[in-house]
Amino acid sequence: MIPIRPIGCFFPQDEKGNILNPCHSKFISAYYRSFFDAFILLAKERLGDNYHSCWLRGSLPRGLFQEGISDIDLFILVKTKKYFKSRQVHYHSNLQQQYPEIKNVDIIEYGYTSKLGVAYPQLAMVIKTQALCLDGIAIGHELPNYKIGKAMMLQSRWLEDDLTKFLALMDYSSSELKAICKIILRSGFELVMEREMKYTNDLYICYVSFSKYYPDLSKEMRKALFWYLNPVSKNEMAKKTIEKLGNCLCQELQSLLL
Image (tube, rainbow, N blue to C red; front, side, top):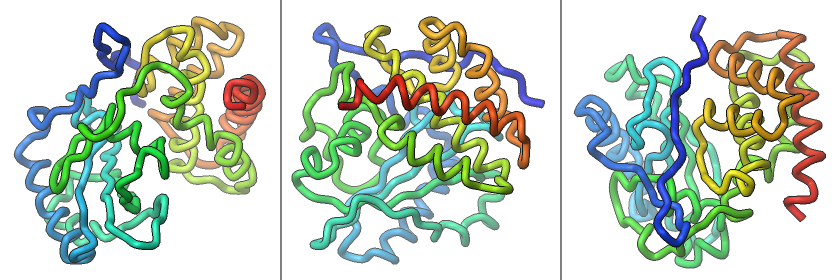
């Protein structure tokens, strides 16, 4: 069993309140750098001239990676005349034998446009505030600064759809429970973010911040954090807790997202 530990922090801000990107290549070990280099070669072979750049987000480029717990979140920008917002890809699987210790890799391709801030503002926010360019054309300097506010709300915009899909599952897997718990925790923080006037996506800090303003739901949110760390399939108690939390969050977030 993985215990709940006080891991994480708020993102730094400048004197004007702009969120500062804490990601840096110094946090990436030689082993992971080798994996990313091999992956980038595969991406370039697959995409050819359509390849634009490869990015890493999450705990690893922030120096908060936990082996066996944290996911590796990669995304690739793809030059395409027919713009698409996102699509999941899995073409890293042939590297698994060479890098057996690297698991839980999540890869998404996004269509690139020079007007990314308008076409996909959530992605622009991620690139500016919480992603590291591993290869290709770094565009963070071209994007506007971000302060605490609705533009920083990412998970809660799709919470209702994600919750509906999860609750419709008859037999959900441990990975599906883990995914919805992460969404619940981050949506809970986004609900109180403007009251905190700080930003994080670290799950423990999300839980603590939410509990400060919603003490009646603190016990359930702590359970969501526990099940993220220790996901199990077909847990009826977990499903009921997620349903209660999710419905409360959707109701509270409705007015904020108008």
